[in-house]
Structure formats: C-alpha cells, structure tokens
Image (cartoon, rainbow, N blue to C red; front, side, top):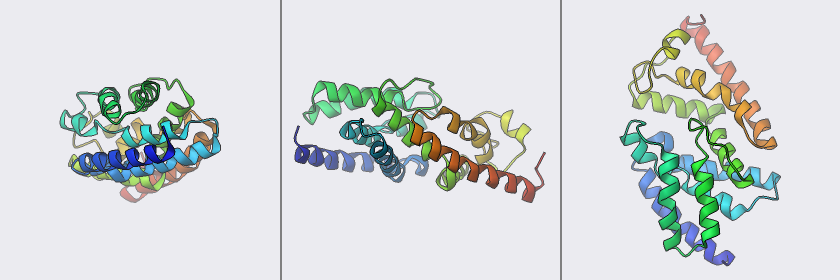
Length: 219
C-alpha cells in the first residue's frame, strides 16, 4: 500500500464517517472523531513503535456504530458492531487482510464499559485517545451535552446520581463523572496516555467540587 493510496482512501472514508456521525448525537459526532485522531497521533509520536496507519484508521472508524447504539439506547455495543462493520468496508477499499484485522481488533477493544483488553500497541493508543476526549474541559462539555440530550438535570447529589439508571433524568454529567470519568486515569494503557489523563482529571475534580459548592450539593 503506498502512502498516496492510503491518504486517498482515508479521505474518502473520512467523508463517509462524517456524514454518518454528524447525523447522530453531538457527543459522538465527527468533531469527537477528529479529536480522537489528533489524540491518537499525539500518542503515536511518543510511541514510535506503533503503526500510524493502523492507529489513524482505527481512530477514524472507532465510533462507526455509535448511531446504532444510540438508537438502541445502549442495547448493543458499538465497539462490537463497529469491529464487524469495518471489515467489509475496508475490504472494499482494497486494504490487506492483516491491516483490516488489526484495525478491527483496535475498534473492538476501545470501549471502556465493555472491559475488553487491547491486545496491541495500536489498540492501546486508540483506547487511550478515545478516553482522553472524555477528560478535561472537552470531557466536561461532552458530559453536559449528553445529559442535555437525555433531558437530565443540571446537577444532583452523589446518592441520586449513583442510585439512578442510565438514560434517566438523574443521568447527569456528574453521574458520568462518578461512574466513569474519574476512574479513567487508572485505566489508561500507555505511559503518555496516563500522564495526560492525570492532568485532565485534576481539572474535572476541581470543576465538580466547585459545582457542588455553588449548588449546595457538597454532601
């Protein structure tokens, strides 16, 4: 596969992914995908043993099945479905079977809640790149976007958040922080990913402490 050939195919697939994701929710639109690609390339620069083409393609396609998961209200795993959908897609574009398998494997293991362990450096990078977009200022913005989409409250107590189901009025940004986001730094797979995640997590900790104070919910 030549560099030019890869770039042309990457741009073609980017347009298709953008069209699909931009018709879905803002939390996982193509802006998110673009940031994950950026995060992944940043990590790959610090981990030069990684295959950057596998990393870029897996980052581009990692949320391909997000619209289906959103429609099912979490009733299916977008990572599992996406890992299957990319196989014929990449095959049609003429990619080699080994490349397709590595991209598919990275997509399969990128989801935090699925608890699948990334089996390659490229898969670890994609996993970390996706998680970094859930942390820091961007992570906060995305958490509130999701809560707004589900008509959740602005804020609630820790007890209300932890004792309520997903996709409910209590599925606030704070619930996402308590259930998932605050745990992410300890789940990162690469050394540079861990360092960046820790920095971004500190910002989120300060934000929710302040929000608790301002709303009188620091209990």
